Amino acid sequence: MIALHRRLLAEALGTMLLLATVVGSGIMGVALSNGNDGIALLANAGATAGMLYVLIMVLGPISGAHFNPAVTLAMRLRGEITSAHAIAYIAVQVLSAIAGVLLAHAMFEQPLLQPGTHARSGGAQWLSEGVATCGLLLTILLGTRHRANAIPALVASYIFAAYWFTASTSFANPAVTLARSLTQSFAGIRPQDVVGFVLAQLAGALVALAIARLLLARGDVVSARS
Image 1 (cartoon, rainbow, N blue to C red):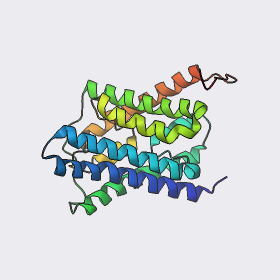
Image 2: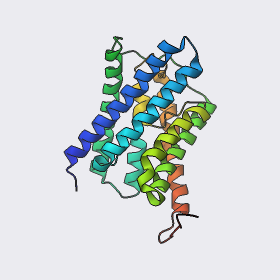
Image 3: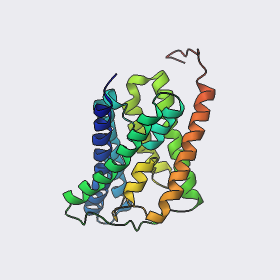
Image 4: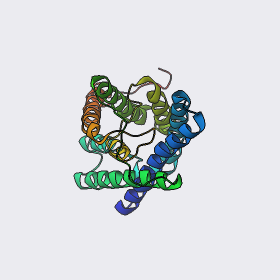
C-alpha cells in the first residue's frame, strides 16, 4: 500500500496542473483566436484532454488519479477508499484546484484572484453537468472493469467529447467548479452559479453508481470481443 502522504501529494500535483491547464489554455486560446469562441474552446478542450491523459498515466499508479471529489465520493461509496482518506483527498483536491488557478493567472501576469463573471445557470446547464459527470464516472467504472489499461485514453477522450456535446462545456468536477469561480477568463463561472453545478455533478455521480451496479454484476465475465 502506498503511503497516504505520497497519494495526497500525487492528488495535489495532478489537480493543480489540471486547473492550470484548464485556465491557462483558456487564456491562451482566447488570446490567439481573435475572439473566435470555437477555436478557443477547441484549444481549451484539447489541452485539458491531453493533460488528463498524461496525469492519469504518471500519477494514477500512485493515487488512483481521482483529481475530482465526485470520483473520490464514488470510490468511497464503493468501499474502495476509507472515509478518512476520502476526506483528505477531497480537501487536497479543492485546495490544489485553487492553487492551479492562481498559477495560471501568475503565468499570464493577471491578477491572482478574479471573482468569476461568466454566467452558467439554468436547467440546461445543470442537466449538462449531471450528464457530463455521470458519463465520466461510467467511463471510469466500466473502463476499470473491462479496459483498465486504457483508462487514461478513455477519460481524456470522454472529456474532450464532453466539452463539445454538453451546454456547460463539461466541468464534471466540484473542485474544478469551485476553483473556476476565481477566474474571469474564458474558463470561469460566477460564484453564485457554483452550487447548482456541484449539486448536478453529485447527482450525476450517484446515477452513474446506480447504473454501474446494474451493469457490473459480480461474477460476470465479458469477452474482449463482445
